[in-house]
Length: 133
Ligand code: FES
Image 1: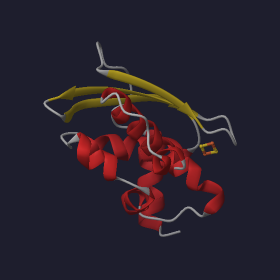
Image 2: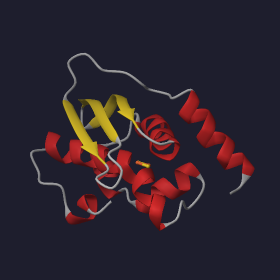
Image 3: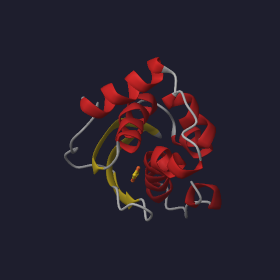
Image 4: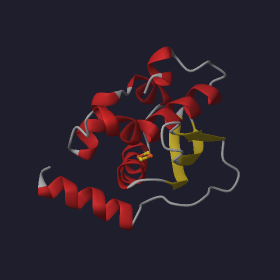
């Protein structure tokens, strides 16, 4: 693992960004990783078709919590249409490494939760690609 990326993950895990709750969120979504039980709750505020604020609470491994920290930073201000198109590659680019098959679900837990929240806010069913993240 590249040291720079490892440091970024550890720093986001130890000092997560956007941790906490939002008062009166537009949508709240809770997900967990069935293989390990790690949990994530995402609070989204949506305004004019864009993410105006996002926070998370969770309990999980360094990769899942660091990816939630980095993803919540990344998506502030993004449109719902942009979020709908995001996939595994966006997460790997964001955290700077491919965690391998065993840890991939750790890395994508936050994106799956976010995309489900976005679909729910639009009264749509999450697509298959989202469910498989
Ligand atoms: Fe559970 Fe990583 S070990 S999400």
